[in-house]
Image (cartoon, rainbow, N blue to C red; front, side):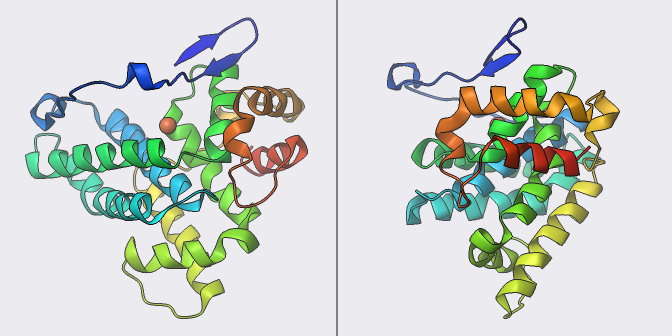
Length: 235
Ligand SMILES: [Fe+2]
């Protein structure tokens, strides 16, 4: 990830040749990660999976990994947050993050990551995982019609709630996600980080320029003005 402070562009780079031959994912190395970074990185993984699940190119393999990853994060984040030395919790989060990384490769993220790159490119004090949590629920509400059936699946499999009415179930997912984020103080407002309404069109423009490729994979057609609307709600 590279940020150009002059253009405020925060760009991710990925090519086949930079894939590791072997990855060592060792939860014992993660026990000293502070509480807030534990929450931010776990929710980054959660949004990789959630966005891959909602991506118009989602496929059954990445769906399986995405669901399992979100489920593990919901089940184990509080344990690792409360006690960083809990190796069972750390192992589950490490595996969840690995699964989320695979979903990101197989399918990819959507507009929430584009918006976040726009925001943290503009203000590098905003942690990536926190930025995703701030705008994520508003993006889901904004695309509700287009993603309600997929969200309803997640209500059952991630939050273990049986609600057979699709609209109610999808709304419950957003509600439960918001409640879950609240446990870790992740429902902040953008204004706390100094963002102002007049900054938003420029941020949307940069987000669109550098990450149009993932924005167009969102289930709803989103233009710059839509990104502005979503950020406005999170101000
Ligand atoms: Fe991310």
